[in-house]
Amino acid sequence: MRLILKFIFLFITIYLLVPYSIGLFEKIQKPEFKNLSISDYIWIGIILAFMVALNIKWFYLDRRKRNMQ
Image (cartoon, rainbow, N blue to C red; front, side, top):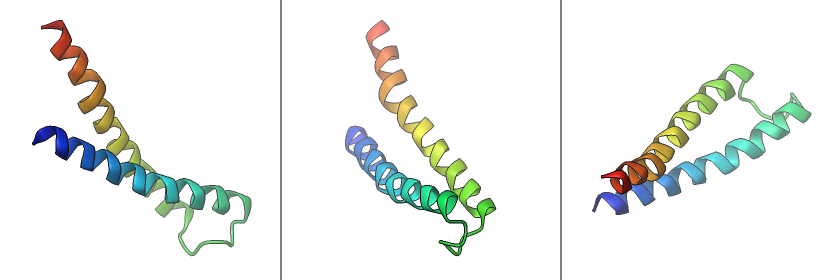
């Protein structure tokens, strides 16, 4: 069950990261493109970076810890 939840969280992270990246590139190239301010993009980026860090911890570091035991 935990593995299924990890994969669901990974899917949600990727699902949010792709449009964020596209929107951020458009915002950098054309600052008037989106209604969100730069500070909003920064906050969303911090949240997504935290989600990516959790995914790395859950999938990579926990697997290494399990293999060492």
